Amino acid sequence: MKSASVLFVCTGNICRSPTAEGVFRAYAKKRGVLERLRVDSAGTLDYHAGEAPDPRAIQHASRRGYDLKPLRARRVVPRDFADFGWILAMDRDHLRVLEEIAPSDGDARIQLFLDHSARWPGLDVPDPYYGGVQGFETVLDMVEEASERLLDAVLAGAGEGSSADNR
Image (cartoon, rainbow, N blue to C red):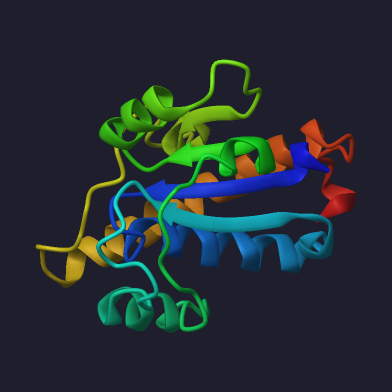
């Protein structure tokens, strides 16, 4: 079921990509399809490997009903390009890195996450790590808005359709 697998990627896998993973999981669970999907997140660098998401990301996500506490950071590995049908970069730098390290014979869809946004198409999800509280809220706003459309696309690609009766 490679086409129904999604990997979210940011730099250290402690802010943006685990937030996207947590929100996407919650949306898939709400639609009753989480058990049929593989959802994960990773970073382009490994300097936070094994760590939980940033406490601020956990706190802000929790306020909206998302649980990021069980997630642990890891680095993107070559096997990810075979295991995941969809690999979503949180910004253009991540997209460039992913395209550089992707195997030439891979068929994973490597895309910018906000290409699935109606409100922010083609933009980067800003890194909230060095910013204030509002940065984490902005990330959540962007991730929530794009996740619905991404889930529709993933389900359509898996042959499950995206009609309202699947929600």
